Amino acid sequence: MQQEMVLAMLAKEPSHGYQLRARLQQALGPAGDAMNGGQIYVTLSRLEKAGLVTSEQAAGLPDRPDRKVHALTAAGQQRVAEWITDVSWPGPGLAEFHLKLIAAAAAGLADPLAIVGAQRRELLRRLRDAQRAAMAEPEGSEAVLLLEGIAARLQADLRWLEACERKWAGRKDRS
Amino acid sequence: MNDIDRTLVLRARGLRKEYGRDAGLVRAVDNVDLDIGGGETLAVMGPSGCGKSTLLHLLGGLDRPSAGEIWLAGRRVDGLTERALARIRCVAVGFVFQAFHLMDELTAVENVELPALLAGRSPREARRLAADLLEQVGLGDRTTFLPAALSGGQRQRVAIARALANQPAVVLADEPTGNLDSAATLDVLRLFESLHMAGQTVVIVTHDSRIAATADRMISMRDGAFIDETSLTGGTRGNLADLAGLGG
Image (cartoon, rainbow over all chains, first blue to last red; front, side, top):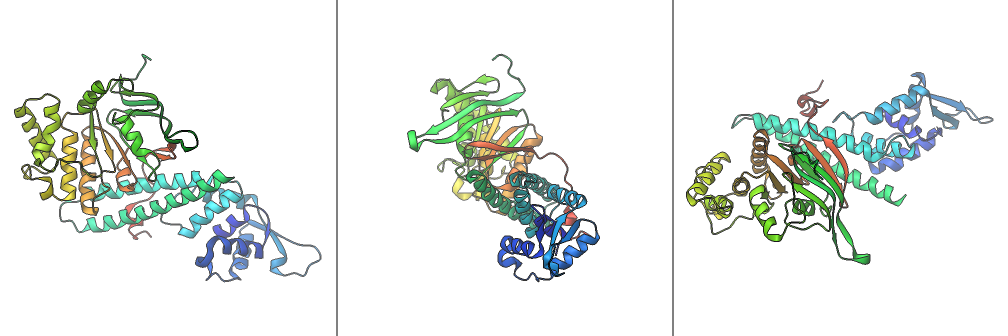
């Protein structure tokens, strides 16, 4: 599991492990079905060792991982802020970008529409590069097909970003 | 308003287009301001129904705004008479449409020379110009073909040549790749790229991200208004190798 995903779910407020799990399940739906329940605790303990998360034992309860309340440290908050402004692609999977929008909105860290806009700019620039490269290839070039594939994928990603924009714009209008 | 920047080819202020009234009032274009510099390629993107085609029609004088001001090549055009507007449309604006809008009974070269003839050029001059333009768009060997004998991509290239016939201040294109397959799209993209290199001012409204990506600047439109504007001329942080799956 990506550490950023767990950090992002913690951005809103300190939480128990089972709450994080429920939030992830809700956000990911069937795509998250394969997620193993224990993974989140493994990731949390790694994040704690890295100094990005602290955990506090709730008083008077047995020492079990799901009794702990986890919170972001200053370094953890910093990491989440960097992650939200990162527009590299295709590095993050779809789930990671999806969770980024959810976390940014839930914790009030950034406007999801601004995140979508920044990502779209980046993808359009890449599409421009791929197309320029395709246009510059000589007639009959084999490489054009690969460049067309890159352009087709970027187009598909851009279509998905349009859907993200519509969805989040709708939520904003209702609130 | 005497301080209009002469380098601006198109300028709009407070542009609005409304249909219907009372509860049924639709603001197809809602208070849009726009400046387009000479030689710039601008893409306006948005979902269908966002008002981008209406905006293009207003900018090109095909339709009248409900309110607002438009300057084309330094001249205020929103209050012109129908006759004066038709003249401006003919000489200062080149239109490219999704469905090509060629005259089926005219050959390629006859389609391209038509705007030049309407603008008052001699038949000989218009024909020479049209033949040159068809050569430029790679159809020098198709001048006498009827549109029906041409592929979609070729028809759109004829339409682009026709749009250039009177050396317009601006080319306005409405979903120019909307009816084309991938290979024909690449041809049309190439053509827009060469117009850009030649310093032609172009405004493209589209929901095809491929053609939007050829622009210098991209505006996102929703519900009649601009919601985001971005320059696309900067470099990227990614590279083709990563995108092709060759990244380390």
